[in-house]
Length: 76
Image (cartoon, rainbow, N blue to C red; front, side, top):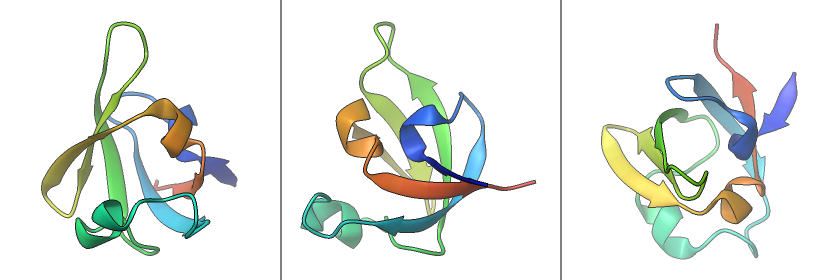
């Protein structure tokens, strides 16, 4: 089932499937936000934005609006 990254809950893991290159900053690509890589939601800020992610043992924080652009598939 394909969903977007912003719908994952804390400690949920997923595999990145696809995203619009025009919407995702190059810096995220350089930090490992690429199709095929696993991503995990580590924390969600108290008001729901931003999200703290772990991608390839790299921690990064992104806004929920950007997370809506990244399609993922939940890992079992």
